[in-house]
Structures are given as C-alpha cells and as structure tokens.
Image 1 (cartoon, rainbow, N blue to C red):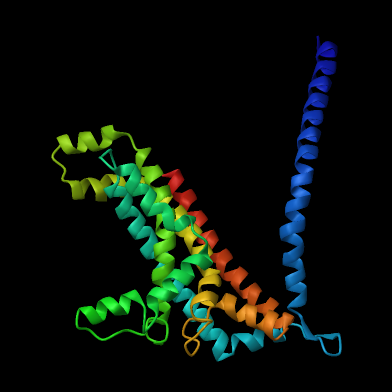
Image 2 (image 1 turned 180 degrees about the horizontal axis):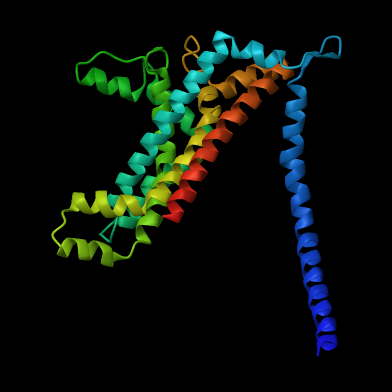
Length: 303
C-alpha cells in the first residue's frame, strides 16, 4: 500500500508545481510592467536625490543627503509643506463629512432621486482644468459672480484668490465641490449594503433617527469612511493642478504646495536633485499616512 501511495503523492506534488509555475508565469508580465512603472522610477528618484546637477556644464556631483538637509531647513519648503498639510486635512475631512451627509439624505427611494444624483456627481466628471477656469471666473474680483452677489447684498467684495488669508481656503472650496461626489458614491454604496432590518428593529425599539445614525449607521460605515479618507488624503496631498490653474502658488506663496515646489525645482530651475529629495519627503509622508489608514481598516475588519 505504501509503495502505491508514493507515486500518487509525487504526481500530486508535480501537478501542484505545474499549477504554481503557470500561476507565476501568468503573473510575470504584469509584475514586470508594475516593477518598470513603479519600482524603477522610485529607485531612480532616490538615486537622483543624492546628486547636484549642473545642466550648463552637463555634470553632476555626488553630495549625499545634502539636498534633504537643505530643503528641510528652507522656509519656502516648510511653508509649502504646511500649506499642503492644511489643504489635505481640511479638504479630506470636509469632503468625507459632506459625503456622509449626502449619503444619508439620499438613502431610500424618492421622486427625482436619479436626476438629483446626476447633478451632484456631475462636477466629478469634468476636467480639473475646466473646473479651475470656471471657478477662476467666479472668483474674479471685478466681474466674478460671487463678488457681484456680495455687492448686491450691500457687502464689500472679497479677494478670493488674491488675499493671502483666504486664497488657500478658496482652492479648498473648489476641491470640495469637485470631489465630494466621490466620497458620496462610495459611502452611499456602503450604506445601501446595510440590511434594512437593522434600522427597522432599532426604530421599533424606540431609537430616534439620530441614535440610529450614531450607533448603527456610522459604526457599520467606518471601513468605507476610512477608505475614502485614505484615498482623498493621498490625492489631495499631491495637489498641483488646481494651484497651477487658479493661483500659480500665490499670492505670496499662500497656496504653494509641495507638488508645486517640486515642479518649480525640477522643471523651472532644473534642480533635479532637490526636486527628487522633496519627492522622497512626500513619498515618506504619504506612506506613513497610508500605513495608518490601512492598519485602521484591518483593525476594523477584525472586530
């Protein structure tokens, strides 16, 4: 009996090895493409950050971590980083909060729901540059519709994009208008997946709407909320296009972000070493945030 089982075991092992080989061979092209598009650029950026480039003489000099030390101590980079963190925190939290509110308002069926949802998600489908052009006209100090309404109300016009105190908040408002629908769609999908029996049982037991939302709806939606927060945090931290189109980093660097700092260093001044070092800082910060969010999601999944 033992001698008969040995060939069968070897045959099963051989079949398993063949399946594993086929699996790895099937994944190999995708893995090579991903490695070429992600791992290679990452290594290249890390390598470039250790050099000082001189494009006039076509030379480069190895300087180690000098680029990291210098830009970390520069006031412009520090302000860019603070602006980015402020933008990311305010935009992400407000977008997710408004997305939750909209999802709760649109829960269930009512007349005109599809039309209303189409209107709400419409900004997400428009190009960012087009949105920026529209809002730039609305923000215009002289002919913008917002200041026109303020004058109609007997109030003074506001320098939405030229006042250092509110310029960053004005850019945040544009991002909220464009990307709140994204948070709304994901959270609404999670809300629709909750069995209605939960809400009906709680209502029968005498729970108010507020209690149902606080003690049933939001705890169940926690994973979706964390997911949307992570996606919006990563995306907003890379903010460049709205700043480029609306303010150009001004006024007085009030809206300059880390991505805009990298753009200036790399593509205006051709300091690729400094631009690469700043990119590494962004990568490290976003990676820490992503790990925090992912750990929170897995922790929530185990409960």
